[in-house]
Amino acid sequence: MVKLTHLVAGAASLAFAFADTPAPTPAPTPAPTPTPTIPCLVPPADPFAIYEESLAPCTNPPATAAPATTAPATTAPATAAPFSDAIRFCAYNRQVLSEYYGDIYTDVLRNNQNEQFVYSAQLHSITVKSNGECLDAFLDDSGAFQLHTYTCSSSNPNQQWNFNTNRIEHLTHNNLCLVAGAAGTKARVEPCSSSLQQVFSDCSSQSTVSLQFQTCYTDKYLSEYDTGLYADTRRDNINEKFSYDPVAQTIKVNSNGQCLDAFPTEDGKFGLHTYNCDASNANQKWVFEDNRVKHATYPNLCLDSDPTYDDHHAQLWECFPYNRNQCWNLIHA
Image (cartoon, rainbow, N blue to C red; front, top):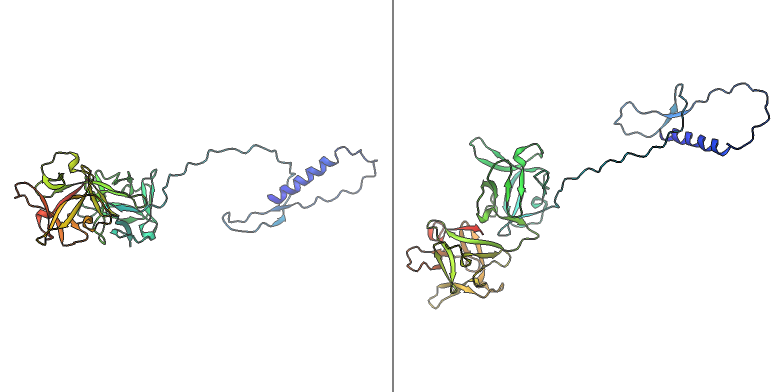
């Protein structure tokens, strides 16, 4: 109808231009001029077809009046769902969630699309950019919850999540949280707890994480006193609060502001104390692995608490996989 409107508008302009012209001297009425065929736009049979505009004759076209100008109706703009920019979810140790063939893994940072997710706070969905699917927690045949990605659907209750800066929690399945594993292993979902493995943050803004160290079998807490380290009854004081820097790999105690430090002794062993923090000090490098606190520079040494010691002092000892004295629960404080 675009070209027909132009014809009508042109006729209206001519009528306006000659509105004040005096009437001409009457003349004999000539034979009537045949009604012209007015070109009009013929729509295709398929309304969804892509076509070029073309003119074709209309059958008995009605007289067309100049269209009345009406103010366009103003509609309220639709509110867009608040999607985040692409975000990478880093665990406390700077390992990242990554999608691979529909499963979610904990991995080292590789800066690829498999690590990039989009979180919608309105839809409560988490979409992975590598395959366009959404994080989905479902019950398997054994009644256990499993984690994978699946075709996104806002009506799918398995895909409802809340990311509250520190934790990725399921909104439909009560008390269910995402858990990071060791690098190269699948991430999973478990009952929500204060475990450090359930702490996630945006990799681009991640800083230190606050934590406590609890022995796995004796319910004692690592505590600083006069630069020494002890596994003692919980007192919920500042001496039991630490912060871990995953970039510098340092563990700082809040009570004196110093860092855990392993130093060689004269007998060829290593002592443990706190010392002024220095990111370049190789004695202050630590990593967490399978509930063990391992020294990054001396990887055969682990934080150890022997409950038979009268003074409850903690120490460094050779790492053994199933040594109960070296098992620590890392608790987000």
